Every structure is written in C-alpha cells, then in structure tokens.
Image (cartoon, rainbow, N blue to C red; front, side):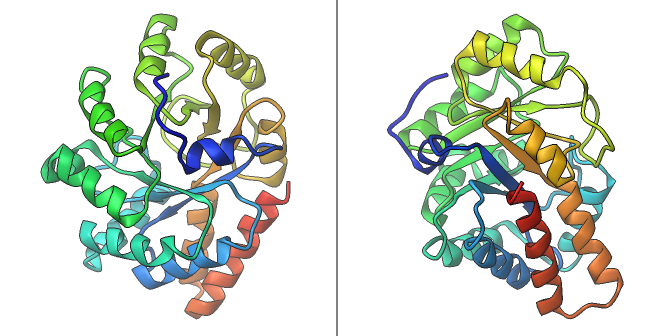
Length: 267
C-alpha cells in the first residue's frame, strides 16, 4: 500500500480499540436529514462515515441501499448537493469521511475535477466499488497529490496476486468483503472470517476494515477483535426506511437512527 502524508483516515485507524464505520445513503430521505445525522454522529465513538453518492445502477449494493439511492435520485439529489452538504458538516465533526461513489460519476466529472470537489468538501478518501484494478492507479495518483485515500475492495475470491496488486495501489485501508454477493444483512458471519482477514493483513501489511453482512452489535464486536474496523450499511439504511414507512417525523428518524448507530458503536 502506497503511503501519503498522514490524513484523518490514518489518524483514526491508529486509535484503539478498532471501531465502527457507518454508511449513509446521501439524500435519503433528504439531504438535510443526512447532514443532521452526520452532525449527531459526531457525539458517538465512531471512527468514520462512508457517504454513498446516489447512483442509478449500483454494482455491489443490495436491494435496501438500491432503493434508498433510487428514492434520493427521484427527489432530485445530485452530486453537487452532496459535496455542498459535506462541506457544511465537515467543520462540525472530527471523524473521517469517505465518499462511496461509482466510477461513472468520477469519470463523468473527470478525475481531477472530482478529486478537487472531494478535497474541497472535506472528504478524507474515496471508495469506488466498480473501479477496475487497471484504472485504479490513475485515480490513486490524483488522490495522492491531494492527500486523499483510495480504499479498495477485496473479496474472499480475490487471488493472492491480485490482493498484492490492490494493496500496492490502495491507501488508507483495504475494504474486505466478508461474503460473496451484494450488501445486505446476514444472521451470521462466515466462520473463517477472522482467519481470512488475518491472512490478508499479514500478506499486505495493510489496515483492513470489514463490511457486507455486518448488522448487529455482536457482529461489530466480533469483527473488531481481528479487523481494524467494522462497516455497517444496510442495517442502518433499512432502519431509516422503516421509520419513513411508519410516517415518523424527521427529528424522530434522526434520533432513532443515531440511537441505533450508537448501539453498534458501543459494541
């Protein structure tokens, strides 16, 4: 893994014990609610937040996050609004912020322009799930110049040689996909997950966060015994969807969601 100057991602990954990295779908149910959730999460013992940019054709997202993205897009949420929202929140929170974004959005803006906007808004790094390994070095170079991280995904089926090549390109941390398939809640984590993550950390020398299928405080506690952090997405987004479906007021949606994230972080 190529190193940059220390940024916020590196700093929080040095904190012990490992902690929670929640995911929010930007603009779901609206941009203002996303902003208030981020502000409220600033009071929780989390390490960072992944902010998903709504996209019409998500690659690895399961039905819960796909639906959230679809509803955000239908309400008119666009890239510029997400950047503006992060810029407004950044000065109020200390945790790391990562942009989870499709490669098509990055290339539509252009590498340099996207990175400029991400840096200006206050993001500390990006995750591009559908970025090919062959294309990654170009984006990694532009991000490195801006002192932003490029966290890349590694699946259980990724070969040792490909793991090495990904680690050489990535910065910040490696995102280990705990299960094959798309994001979504699971009742149990793979029995060999700790062993797999241990081998990956030994082989690459990189920090490793684990995502996909993590949905309960018990899952978070287990993952943080062998990984450098746990990523939770679908369980949070599903809870937001349920609260919306119940007709809850925005303040209740924020409070209930942040309370749930707090229970995960407390693990």
